[in-house]
Amino acid sequence: MTDFKKLSGFEWDKGNLDKSYQKHNITPNETEEIFLDENVKIEEDIKHQEQEQRFIAIGKTTENKILFVVFTVRSNQVRVISGRLANKKEREVYYKKV
Image 1 (tube, rainbow, N blue to C red):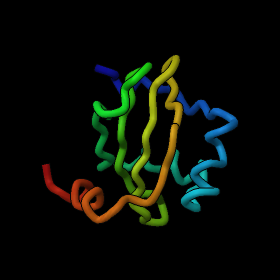
Image 2 (image 1 turned 90 degrees about the vertical axis):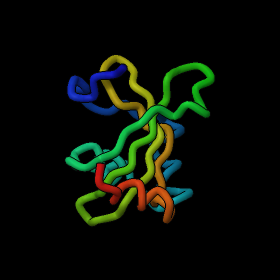
Image 3 (image 1 turned 30 degrees about the vertical axis):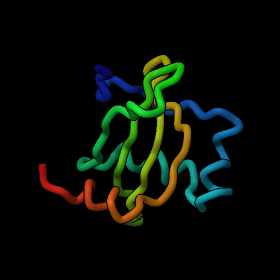
Image 4 (image 1 turned 135 degrees about the vertical axis):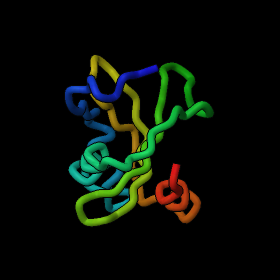
């Protein structure tokens, strides 16, 4: 399993850098902010692991938006695939006490 505490930053693919903003009005900065959320929920994205291990993160931005982010890890960096506002079910996962 990936040790998320050892990640050193973000790597952005040119194609994905603006995709979340254009499709969902979510900026790259907002996407990165959820990883600073002490309550961020991260799990493996088992359904979409064709070529590499993928993860799903649900977390809150500094503006209190709950985001759903799909990412992978490369060379100890988060490589964001997509980010959008979380739907009702995903928000419930975020707020559920573990």
